Length: 162
Image 1 (cartoon, rainbow, N blue to C red):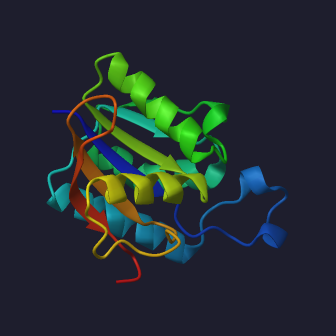
Image 2 (image 1 turned 90 degrees about the vertical axis):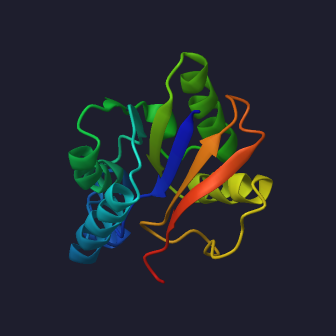
């Protein structure tokens, strides 16, 4: 059964502290939250063979502790994932699933990543505990019946604010 992990990048420095949005790195809290999320994913036994990661600095830094728990995952970081819409993220995931990939982790940006996570949680009828607005470092995982994403089953939720 295919699976999908969706995660928003961790807390990044303020826009005024970076040369441009694309190069915004994580704050110390962001690094700590990303490490906590990775540990919780590890504890839950989640796996990934493909990592779809926005190429922005803050998403790459968020993925770094996840790479340690998914050491065999192939990393793809197409520019299309940078501030991608829900529809673009859904398309990237379904295209990967159509190639036979069985376990995906997706790390991206709001609002698209939060809309995608909320949409799948609603389809799964599993909104309990899902944080409003999808905060930084929030992560959710689903088992998927097929590449259509029509019948997800929520298996994991990490809310750094909880």
